[in-house]
Structures are given as C-alpha cells and as structure tokens.
Amino acid sequence: AQKVTQAQTEISVVEKEDVTLDCVYETRDTTYYLFWYKQPPSGELVFLIRRNSFDEQNEISGRYSWNFQKSTSSFNFTITASQVVDSAVYFCALSGEFTGGGADGLTFGKGTHLIIQP
Amino acid sequence: DVKVTQSSRYLVKRTGEKVFLECVQDMDHENMFWYRQDPGLGLRLIYFSYDVKMKEKGDIPEGYSVSREKKERFSLILESASTNQTSMYLCASQLGRRDRPQHFGDGTRLSIL
Image (cartoon, rainbow over all chains, first blue to last red; front, side, top):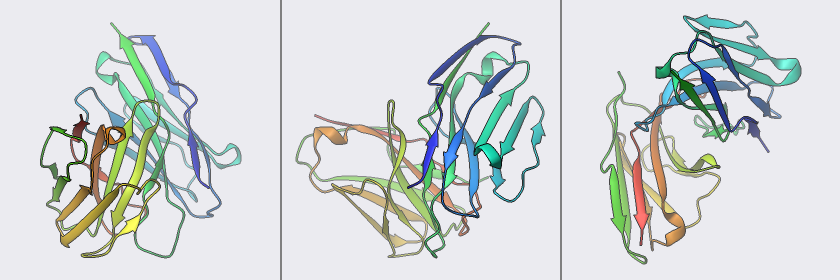
C-alpha cells in the first residue's frame, strides 16, 4: 500500500528564517507523481508543484525550493526568508497506484502546520 | 483558471437524514474526486469518477455513494448520515491524466447532529 509521511506535525519559526518541510513516501510504482499543496486558514487547497518520478532535478520558484531524492524516497520543501503569509498547512501527496485507468486519487500525508511569527 | 464550486460552505444535518453534497467544475475535466479531511488524518479519498456515470471506490467509501450524470457535476451522497461523518468534505477535478494536478473547491464543513 502507498504511504506518505510528514513527520513534522507543526513547525513554528520567526519571520525571515528558512524552514524545511519533510516528506517521505512509499510506493511500488516505477512511475509516479509527487505534489505539494498549501492550505491557508481560508481552507482551499492550492497546488504548488508537481514532480515526476523520473525527473530528479531540484526546482526553485522564488523563495520556494523542492528537493527530490529518489534514493531516500523524499520530496522536501524549503521556504527561504519565510513571511507571515506563508503560514498554512502544507500537504505532500503521491499519485495513486496505477490501475490502468485514467484516474487515481492522491495519497496525502497528514500535513505540516507551519506558523510564521512576526 | 479552474473553478471548482461546492454548493455549501457549511451544512448542518441530523442523524439518519439523506445528505447531498454537490460539486461543479467549469473546465471540462474528465476526472472528479471526493475527499474528507479530519484533524490529524489529512485528506482521505472517498470516491472518484473518470467519466460520466463511471465511479470508483476510494479508501473509505463505506456509508457514501456518488452520482455523475453530467461531466461537470459530481455529487456525494450520505445515504443515512451518522455523527462519525461530521467532517470537512473537499471536491477536486483533474484533466484526464495522472500527472496533472487536482484542483480543489473551498470545501463543505458538514456537521451531523
């Protein structure tokens, strides 16, 4: 069975600090997709990034960066120079096991609640 | 931008009632999903659909059913609501490929009394 583990339930840092959110996954698929979503206090899930299993290039988007390491089954998310607006719950998710159909639900981690204090 | 609209933001129902949660998307996406979100458990997949009138069970389908009569609309049905179905329900849609992101609605916070 698939699994996504976000071991950090809650992280609290002071504004401008760097912070890394950990994500470890388990899957038997050889082709799979990893996602990060942000859920601000208003409740809607906002898509941040997708990574394919065959592409281990790290990605940077402004203050956000992602480190994908297949050898350790990890897909970690770093926010540089954090801001109060980054406060949210962040979810890591894995595409469902391939069943031959055109759709799979996502397997989500339990989320990391990130608190950025001014 | 993809727009996924859930009919109610908050809903209060009584035990034993039949409850309908509605979700509409405006991007002609093939795939639609229903999740529930509970504190400490993250999001869990209830049902999904990859085409009109097609449905697949997710990880926790017990006590729920779904309906997809039109491509843009996906309904979640609680046949006989129970208190353990009090939760936040999230609908999502996706272009018909596994590698595409799912786009979520704002959620319905359902309380069963």
